Every structure is written in C-alpha cells, then in structure tokens.
Amino acid sequence: MTDRTKLIQAALDCLKNSYAPYSQFNVAAAVLCASGKVYTGVNVENASYPAGICAERNAIFHAAACGEREITAIAIVGGKGGIVSDYCTPCGVCRQVMREFADPGKLTVIVAKSPDDYKEFTLAQLLPESFGPEFLK
Ligand code: THU
Image 1: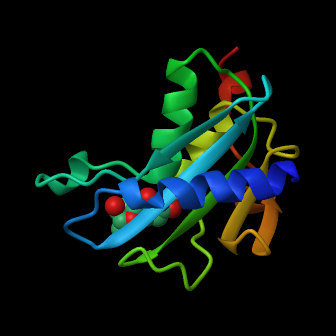
Image 2 (image 1 turned 120 degrees about the vertical axis):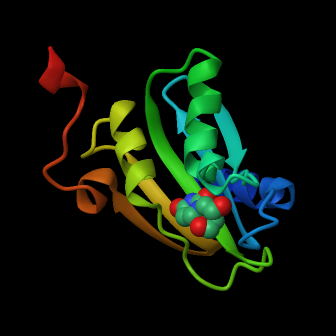
Image 3 (image 1 turned 90 degrees about the vertical axis):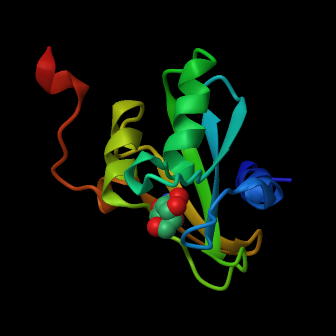
C-alpha cells in the first residue's frame, strides 16, 4: 500500500466522526508528517458558527499538539451528508495553516473521492506567492 493510499484511507475512515450538524458538509483529513506518523482530523462545527474548525486544521493542529513540526502530505475527503462525490479542496485559511509547517514546493495536497480517484497538487500551486514563518526571522 502506498503512502498516498494509506493517507486517503485514513481520511475516509474518520469521515464518520465529522461533526457538521449545521452545514451537513462532512470533511476529514489525514496528514503525513516528516516523522512518518499520520494524524487525522474532521470538521467540528459549533452553534456559534465561527467557533467551528475545518478538518485540515484539526488534523494539522492534532499533529502539532503531538510535537510534529513538518508535514509532507495531506489527504482531504468530504461531501454533503458524508457522501464523497466530488473533490473537496481546502479553504484559504487551511492553506495558510499548511504553509506554517511545510515547504510549499514539497507539500503534497491530495483531494480524493476514493483511494483510486484523486487529484494531487503542491501547496505552492494552491497558495502561490505565500507568506510564511521565514518572513518574520
Ligand atoms: N470545511 C472543511 O472542513 N474543510 C474545507 O476545506 C472546506 C470546508 C468544513 C467547514 C464547515 O464545517 C463545512 O465544511 C462547510 O463549510
């Protein structure tokens, strides 16, 4: 099984845990770190709408909370009612959060419908001319 297949499957496996009672749009993400470990996350909505969080950020913050500081790939799956019928591309805020922990030219962002049906981008493609931690050094 390739890293890509494993990552997509990890995201699909945790999609059932997405908490999206307001939008009914369920999303899950699995992030592969430089350590080789995989961390998952789902979107978690809130009655006070802006307090909710996307799946991608939840997965990345999960990794950061476990001590990870470099991500190499992220797989994202999602859809209305938990039915993954299209590619779910990450929102702008999540792209910026990916930027914090990755080299934009090297981070692989996978959006998938299934382990065999996916699209791949680099973060540099999804977030060109970006602002990152090195600007503040
Ligand atoms: N959402 C994600 O979790 N990731 C994305 O990339 C796009 C949107 C969530 C946020 C909210 O809970 C729901 O999908 C509808 O916007």
